[in-house]
Image (tube, rainbow, N blue to C red; front, top):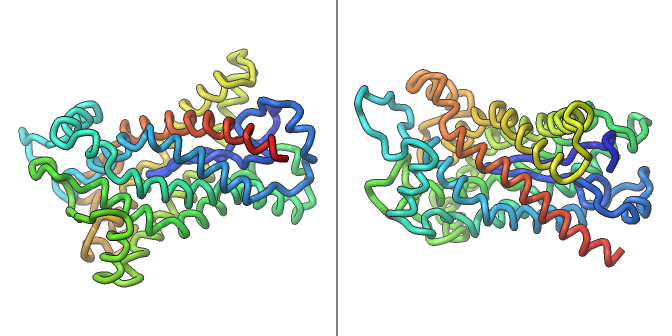
Length: 345
């Protein structure tokens, strides 16, 4: 891929963020085979199905490694919810490193990987959909505007990323809700933060939520999730490309794996600055069991009023430690899956 081609749709899940890459067929982070790129005409509409499969598989590989950071982030974001910390008081989790050691000590690897099964489902639904939709949406916009899809257009990238992000967030919201509740739960009583929800597994959680809260409960926080993912999707695309161009033209790096990895880490930091407030609101909207927050705006106002503006950046380090590595690992897995799929073209 030359330096003028469009950036990948790498986004946080969780996480969120997730993180997602551009679709398999048209615009991956890096093109390792010049033969594969020559097979595809820049005007050919990319395959959403192949993008979905490749993106889902790659994201699942990445989340296996980064899920502990997501667990830590979730608990840090819920700690001290709507309460000001009294001077001299101690918190269960003081930072990402201490939280990792604390969870490992009292809950073991099972605690660090809590919600992993649901995270797999979420990654397939969320990132698979975004990966599958990003290039087709971008192609459709270019066709409507009668512009050249082979030329990079930041406005089109932002629109395609934002639309794909919002649609995928709406589709995957119930899984994000369950994942948040599974990860916030602690089997060690002294380690519990936020409202606790005990579910045996993902299906049990969905069944219980539907039985007690109805369909409205299943889609609790979907508006916050759509804002979170839409903002992240729209920001990440042009941000990654700008950083990559600077790396190439000012830093003198080749347009290869090192350049892409560093670009992902640098752009991921600024992405966290934009996304973390949305992530805080999503996490708290999902984890509430009653009607603590009426809407994302209500959650924002109550959080700032009770905890101050700094509360919007709780779990920032853990959030970044998830986004940066998740982006790189997704890229690595994406390239391997891409090579396998190319053999059948």
